[in-house]
Image (cartoon, rainbow, N blue to C red; front, side, top):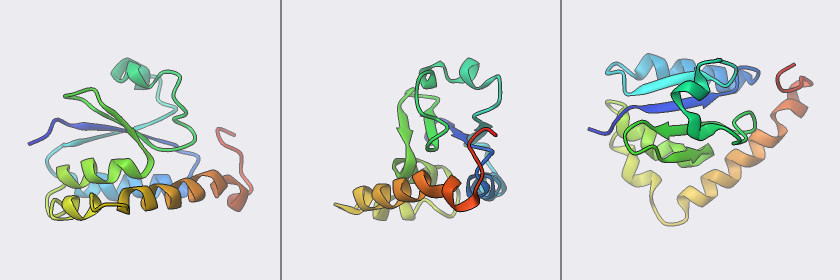
Amino acid sequence: MPAPLLLAYDPACTLCCRMALWLARRDRQGRLLIVSVRDPELLALAPELAGRPVEKEIHGLDLGTRDIRAGADLLRPIARRLPGWRWLSPLLGLPGFPALLNRLYLRWATGRFRRTGRQPFA
């Protein structure tokens, strides 16, 4: 089984908060460590994220390998860690699918504050 995955999410984003809660409810084995980008402990847990645009898109750090992923590239590592969702991991790796998912995610992520009228970290 893979090492835990630290996920740094933006608490100013409604969808990010909903997704963090959804993931936390399904993580019965403690394979995900979900941390707000505002948490002062984040950089102590994951110094590799310093200088990264963590407020612009979700970032993850594999606590075993220390590999960093962001955006839709986190879907496969997340699926591998959640019971009942592992079957999805190979599908998320089909040729061209990760790139398509990432384009869709980035389009959504860059426009999320325009849609809500809020500012990040406001």
